Amino acid sequence: MSNGSFDFNQFLQESKETLLNPKSYFSTMKTSGGITEPLIKAVLYGFVAGIFSLLWGILKIGAVGGGFLGGAIGFMAFLWAIIGAVIGLFIGAVILLIISSICKGNSDFEANLRVTAAVMVVMPISALLGFAAGLNVWLGFVVSIVVWGYSLWLLYNGVVEALKGNAATAKTVMYVLVAIMALFLIMGVVAKNKATRFMNDFNQETKDLMKEMEKN
Image (cartoon, rainbow, N blue to C red; front, side, top):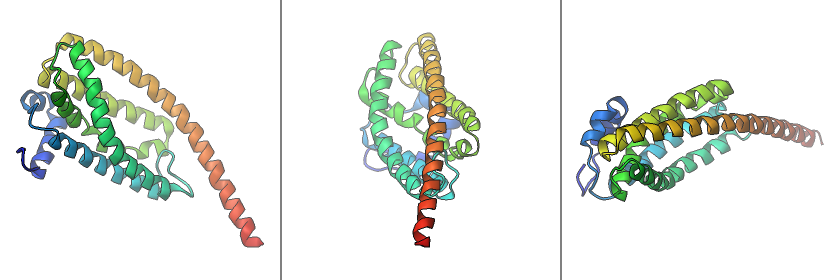
């Protein structure tokens, strides 16, 4: 992509290459050229992820988006996906900068920002598969493990190939991140169970209240 314009077709091609051939993509990706391109990438990934979150909310098959307020929660998830993508881009770049420094890799912020934006290609996929948690909380857990595990594989390739970090150190860091990720996902499953029960009770109480008001 040129500095002056954003090539959407090239964006699609780069997204495909990132997912299917990460080692090759990260070994040749540009690590400079301004922050506009990675920022647009993050917004687009967030927008697509938000569409899926909105859809699952409307269809009432999301992890917490079902029931009486499913559509409203889905719309909130759509907005947050876009806002969160922008915030996550910069926070992720700072975290990646620390990881890259540990691995003796590129410590330039823009380079780490660009790698972070590329790895965010998993965001729409995670949202697309978000319905799994609505079907079964443990199915959602397995899907999350697979998706985020693959995102760490992309991150590893980004650190080693694009940022020129030490491969052995990068592997060790990724193993630590896998353990942390698994812990947080388990905690997330517990939290989702509680949230789902709360929403189900709230929806039932709301319906009962509306029925009482209709009778009166």
